[in-house]
Image (cartoon, rainbow, N blue to C red; front, side, top):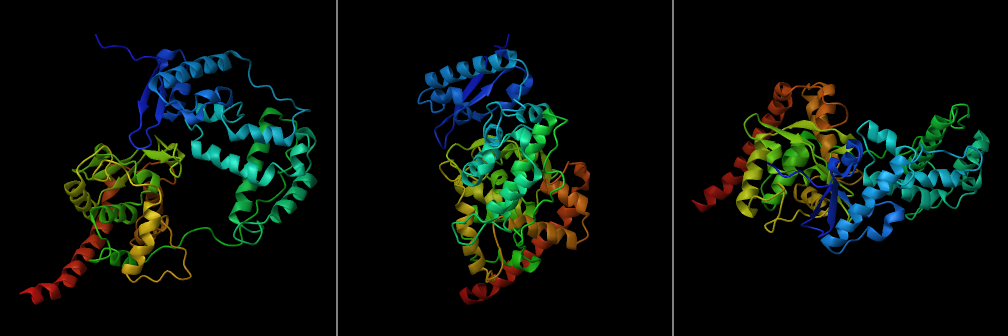
Length: 420
């Protein structure tokens, strides 16, 4: 008879050596709570359990897990969250959104199977502490805030100095801080239907400069694969996954061998690193909690075979010889060097790792691939296209990949003649 699962599972990550926690239904908690606490870092424990956030041993991690289970059970037995409609200040209300403790929105997102990601909470905390916490608006009572108060805050926020010079006015940062506060005020109205949201008649500010990265042309992408641009198997495989599949960095480094279907062929994108820029990163699901199917073109298949032949096959597809996954800055370091070696002019253009996704979308659109499919393939909306429809982008990508092979072959001909 198989042994039943315990109330929790604790694992130790190979890269950061930190413990991660998964709660099981046998703990007595709801399935939704267990799903929220699947492969989660102890760093995410609520403030009242802060002493358990950095366990140094498995025994300490187990103590933290038991403490969390008792905490969640106690929370579940309490009456529904009551909000002081008169006394709570703007600062107190906004502060509830920077962690899972008493977060007014968390339970509703869990019920939709879309729990907060750790990075979202980190972003909220940065917005609050860097741009809101010291503003006079935080002392106002939520029930008393009017449109004039919000407009005055926006005026002060627009004048905030940025580290690189200039002010917040007209920037992407200004827009996202505004959206964070607006989201919190809308959540307050859910609990107080008769309260008038001061944001109702205020238009969302738009940044004066686009934050979108620029795309490379099809010819420029082909040049990235010329001999001498990508120096080793890892670079060739990563570049192919970026520009021919459109994987995000967090998804690329989380790709596992079992996610690759060599027969169809296709890639199932079902994992992504959360908090990828931090030591406490953990494995979760893709952005927007949406799994999707992506093409698996010939150029990437060969690149992965070469990578595994060089570094061996490990837990994750893109691993070094020791089995470790490169850090988050790996692509940021190599991309500018690829552009230089490929002779791609980047001055005046915003070429970032995310440019690979824009480049792929542009190439597919130019070949007549339906926009709806492109959106699904890149994970921008629900995946409604069947696996059988993969032939459209697959054929386009393979056509371009064949062009890469032809150019590489032509580039090698002079050398072959010299050595003959």
